[in-house]
Image 1 (cartoon, helix red, strand yellow):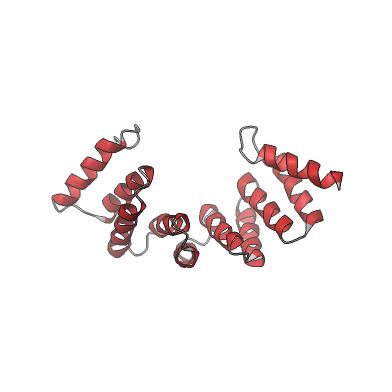
Image 2: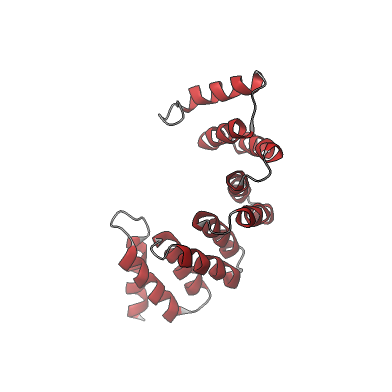
Length: 178
């Protein structure tokens, strides 16, 4: 409850007390890991996700979060391994496909990233963030015409408050000047 109200310090104390008293189920470690992420204490969060996965090896969100920590720490191979496990556990999760696609994008594995983004868009065609990252990969891969089409799709589907909307419009304008 404290965590939901933004009182992470109290949430951390409560989760730690539950663990100290022997009530350390996977979800307690998972949630304390979220608090540690909020405090940017990634090594402590990593330890909690390791424990959460040990206690519940079928928790795709724990693999996702641990993978994102590895990404932050500059360990893309470990991040990718965790996202592969997460996607295997929940193959229709747009969020997991998007996260794995972004790791693949950063590794320069554009075809694999596009495959994840396309699969995510089949599940949720209106997911503007996925469409944006698909466009970005197409652009990086030198496929300008396809990239512009994908950026235009972002403009068509993104709500006004979407943080990629302005960038997509800018990319379209850049390409049209060429």
